[in-house]
Length: 271
Image (cartoon, rainbow, N blue to C red):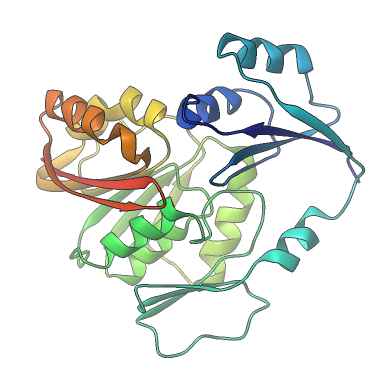
């Protein structure tokens, strides 16, 4: 089993967590976790380049703590700490080793691995809650930064006719495919890419990433919408909402709503 280094960064008002998350994502990270007070990144010992890490963090005057962790079964670690989650009393998310959860509109099975999206983080639960309020029946959907595939899976369960999903994280690919099979999905098409498709048009775009990536691809994402199409975005801090409204307006998008949970925001825009 591989050995790892765990890097811990304490979060404060002065640290733009989405900017740092995006910067760290450029490195060979094996796992990433975010909570209210910390950012944690795991690197395989063989992939860890502390010089590059320091270069990124020093630019932002950020210090970190480093911990060496001897090889262990990371999937077993995730399984031991993974608990089912229920959102809006409509959607249940559980692992394949949990008992079925009844009385919900839909149940999603997510095998806990190192890819992002289990429903526990505020950004994912905000996306799921707003998706439940939209009409997906017969709609063509694009999931940008699909992670575990949880939003793509829900889109199919809500009646979408086609879902195109992309993620440039190799760690997500195998996990995504496992989760698609576990949920018996047949309308989801996955590609390991970092950019949206060029000429495709969609009724609904789902983008649960971070502010840095959203701003980079916002003009392109807006052009992918059909008339009256909608885009749901999360991974945005509540303090960045006004910036996102302004930038989205420059791309011709109309702000429809903002929902906030635990300092994170979901924003919905229309074409």
